[in-house]
Amino acid sequence: TTAWHPDASIRSNPQPPPPGLLAQEAFRAGARLLARYDLSLDVWAYHTQLDEVLALARACPHTRIVLNHCGGPLGAGPYVGRREAVRREWAQGMQA
Image (cartoon, rainbow, N blue to C red):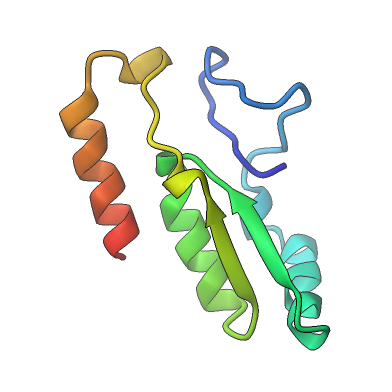
């Protein structure tokens, strides 16, 4: 479980992960092991975490990362009514 947001109204998981999980060295070490066994890492992240996914990919260049749910553009909580702004943020993150 990697999708995380600081706003309590945005919860996709009954037990949300800790903040910054994708940047934790223990998590990255585990992600690097997957490449050794020709396995992939499936990451579910919100659009607000795309920079963290990019940093993870750069830190684990040999690990195949599958970004689930198209980077999770949010439309709840503080993102209600901000569809175009979210789309722009999401598009920039996906482009990177």
